[in-house]
Image (cartoon, rainbow, N blue to C red; front, side, top):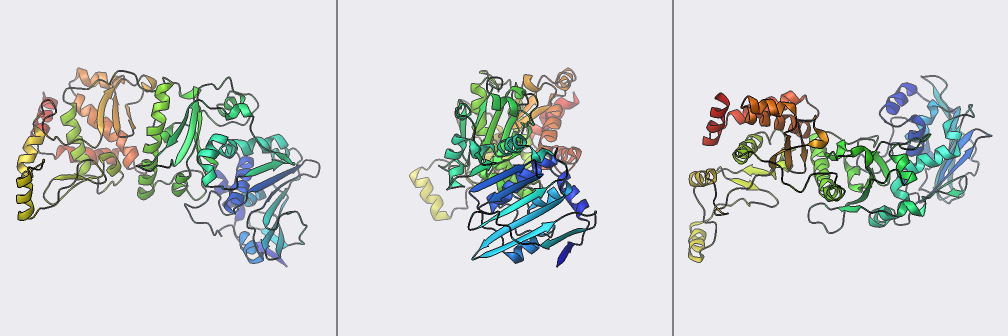
Length: 528
């Protein structure tokens, strides 16, 4: 009996194709692998037959029984949960319909279950499929085989080198000993093997040697959540030259730090890291961090941008920055031995900005990670969750007496007195001034002179090499310039889905309503 997918399948597949940054041929291969890995496969065998015009991928995963294989042909069906795995609803085989004459899927689901189907796209609205005889292409007790047949013998997917290079390019961590030993052995305990026409894929021993390896830790955890490496020797190592786009006639990814999860490369570049090295185009690296799978989009090719997942992403990104910065400094690619210049009134302005942001934290919860998750209690005092200054709970009269008797440090002050003390400058480390949740600095960003500034970890840098900074100095509007730059930088951090002016307007409004002596002082300077 012939069945049919009764939707505009071609249009849906083209929409899915357009959501990826890679060429369609590469997406087909990577999705075949990702779905196989999600099915707990430990071995994948690719067969490229240019003479008979087909590409076949066979895995030893859990396979599918007949009812599940039937559901597999529904483009909208998926048993996958977002945040788990790296494949997307069997899209590798489905996207191949855009290029193929037909696609055959065979599967062993265990307990003697075997089933096979043939599928083709006859027009945008018709994608008929049918059950066909099982042809024994799977040599394992369980597993799935996908065979893509072409009419054009010149198709990229019929080139053995293209298939092999694509696999290594998009799943490089699976072939690198350092990344496997430090991270992936906890994910794939039996390891992963891949072959093309019977030849086991691997990378040369020279590629296994690294000079600048690093590990990523989250909080106080003892086991790293990620591991990676960076290098500048792109012209001395062929594989890095290909990654950085230095080698001719190769399909390559751009230079930068490539981030992978479960072995699959998701993004490449420096923008996602939030750091821009001085010689960004000369640096190439790979980072494997499985925890990022929780914040991937449904097609697993980008990161989610809703408020909850953004907080998770920024928390992980901050940990990545802390791990990467020492390596960049050792390579002379970030910062200098001298501390960045700081204006004399930068500290009080930092406190004002912090207070203004605190007023917006309920509407923009992403700011909590920058502010150290500070909050205002009913008494009006500031507290910090998870470290730093602790929020003091109301004490009973007996507890107050006990504290006074033992001379405990930090005797409780009234909110009014504490506010006055915080406003006074501290001498020689005396007192207990409240530490800001972030650092605001004026810095010569020679590596990005056209940028207004940047945010790295919990440091907001205002670029003093930008022409607008010099104009601000000439017109004595430095403080206002800093406020605008901070607002624009944080708009991408706190509300990336909205126009920057929306967050900037609310930030400036929050700042302008502050009623402190410092605020009046700054306002007075702006009016001079």
